Amino acid sequence: MSKIKLDLVIQGRLPPPLTPYKVRNVLRKTMQSLKADSAVLGLAFVTQNKISALNQAYHGRNKPTDVLSFAYQDVDKSGYLEGDIAVCPAYVKNQLKPGLGSLEQELNRLLIHGLMHIAGYDHRTDKTEKIMFGLQEKILNSL
Image (cartoon, rainbow, N blue to C red):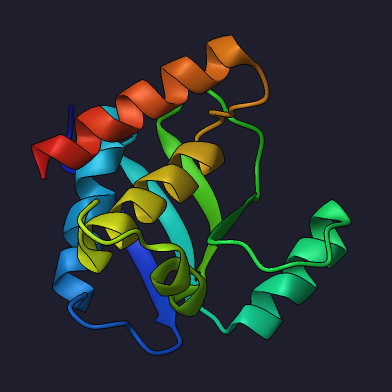
């Protein structure tokens, strides 16, 4: 695989302990695992109100969630990905179960999850869920 090219714009306040370097590292490792060598991505860290509004507008669900992804092109074999990921750190923090991983680990999981959706993965069926979540955890464990 050629050198990975990642054009990333981050909006909103990064929740500690994430840094732009750590975010780029997670996304690059995910791209490598997905055999994607180029991506243009927007990443927004948003409030619960904002993610609820996005969830309502795009999925008809008027409630907060942890992550939403928006792909801007159909997935093909070119290795190019384009889209936006919205993450709600407050929701993630509220849902975090004590002793079951750190906030950083869960945020990394959501970055991986969001990028996998942009790459065409989904979890609509038991089969696709098993595939997606299996690869997601493999990538997370490789960080």
